[in-house]
Length: 202
Image (cartoon, rainbow, N blue to C red):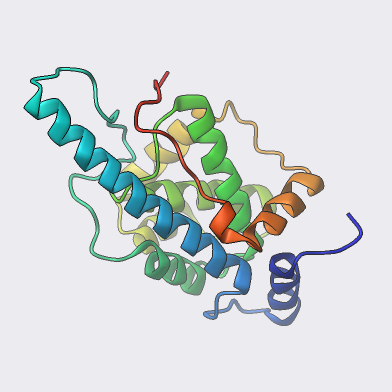
């Protein structure tokens, strides 16, 4: 790929100028948040429509699979604000969020399901923790990430293990795959984590 995407350039610029972390998200992360927010809104509506339809038809068909990444209620904090909080306090490389996004896609591809307001935050903090440990040379403890993410240390540890096993510990991301993800983020309207409500979770 001879030309670097604007999203990729924004990551390079931030990481080259930041030694103590940054609270200003680069373009790539803002694009990611747009992807996540759009997907969450769309999937939440699909879940609600499907739930009403099943209730009206007395359909006992399994709806959305509940995993340990699902909270009992949707957090008040938007996924964008949540990302900004993690970026500010974790001081991780912004590229870790792109890696985390790729990990989430792998998770959904293997297990089915979809990103909603009930699982997005926990999946993000978990996938980001895994990405940081794989990509960055220095990082904070699980206890610290649990505090940032608003979960207990025990939950953080369990979610990390569950996520790793679901990925079958396949954490390597090629340069080509990373760059391709950045290129797609340049056109966020065409690139979203979408899983049909009718998909059969394995």
